[in-house]
Image: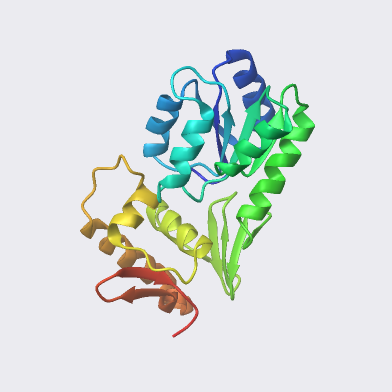
Length: 230
């Protein structure tokens, strides 16, 4: 999924459509799921920026889906806002305890929803202000899908862009090839691990003219990391 993508998991079509129209007007790309199982299939194709998750769903409940997402390394860092008719304090606490980042009780206003989404995204992306990731003079604009360094445009393919965006959002941590495949390509992708090496080389080549290729570091026997430290 692309940057600024919201996945709404809600079994009531009227609410899904209302939220979708509101968020699309706000510049978000919205994907819809009516069940937890459908949401899991969509998540296998790529991670959204945030999940709006209804508590009461047919089959697996939203609270159980939230618990499963927080147990999985692939989805653990994806922000979750619970949407529910349950407004009692114990229910709110339970939702937060399983890993939800915020909680909105129905009925809610569209203005409140948008404000909550922006607040959660700001907290979850401390290095990303107004859609721009910046390290030194290297900048990634996640809204316009543009990369620049030293005030000059840097050309790269879409996969290299997603790799760079992921690395800059998660600096100083080592990721294996298999982890990068899950996080950048999506868990459902049928791609060999060595494909990661090919795109890492392409990314370094794109960054080489400005000297930022050294930020993409190989950790022997472990994988790759994005770091300003030598």
